[in-house]
Length: 308
Image (cartoon, rainbow, N blue to C red; front, top):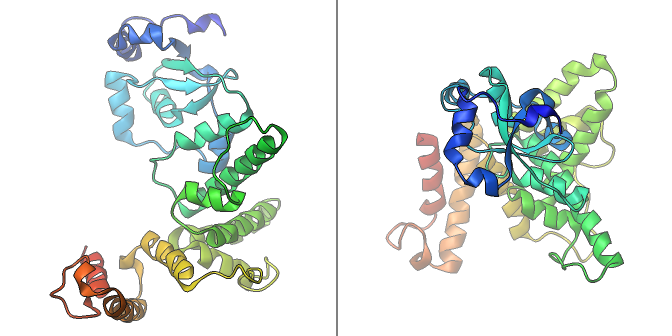
C-alpha cells in the first residue's frame, strides 16, 4: 500500500465523512485511499458493466463525502462500492474511505461481489450473467466439498438449480436459454461488423424477455437445435413449474408495452386460470375475498397493473 493511504486533507468532504465515523474507523480498519489507485472488480465489470451514476449521487458525495466505506481486496479492486467510487471521481474527490477484506478463495470473493449488488435494479442480461457466475461458483464449491468432506455442506441439488434460486426471478430453463444467448453474443463480438446484430439481440433480451432473445438467435440460425431442449425422461417439468417460469417472464415485463392483442390474450388466460383456482381451491382462500365471481381474481390484477 502506498504513502497515499495517509489521511486526506481535513477540509475535503471525504475527510469530514471519515471523521464522522469516529472510533468505528479504528475498529473497522478504515483507511483513506487514493481513488485513482482503486479499480472496479473484474467480475463486477463482467456482470454489470460500467457503472452509470445518478447526478444526485454525485452532488450528494460532493457535499457530504462517502458516508459508507468501500470494501476492497488486497489487489486494490473494489468489492463493494464501485458506483460510489465512480460518483466520487465525478465529484472531484481524490481520497475515499475503504476497508480491506481478505478472502479464503476466489469463489468467496466473487460471491461477495455479487451479494454486494443484491439490491440493485438489473437488466435481464445482468441477471443471466449473475446466474452463470453463481452456477460456476456452486460447482466449484461442490467439488471442494467432495475433496474435503469436513467443509460445511451447502444446499443439496444441481448447481444450476441452486444458482437459479440465488437469482430468484426466472427458472433454471429460462436462465439456461439466456446463457446460450450470452455465448452467441460473445462469439458475435469477435467481429466488429456484427455490432447491429448484437444490439438487436440485446434489445430483445432486455426490453422483451430472455425467451425473445433466444428466439431471435434461433431465427438468425445462431443457435442450433429446437426452441427448447426436452428434459430427460422422468424429469419433465410439471404444468405448475412451466406456469411459474411464464409468470416470472410476465412479471418482469412492462404491461404498458404489450399490444392490445397481447393484453386481450393475457386477460382471457388469467380469467381461465382464475376460474380453475376458484373451482379447485375455493374462493374462501382467494386473496380478494369470497364475494367475487369465479375467474375475476387474476383478471382484476391485470386491470390494476394496466391502470398503473
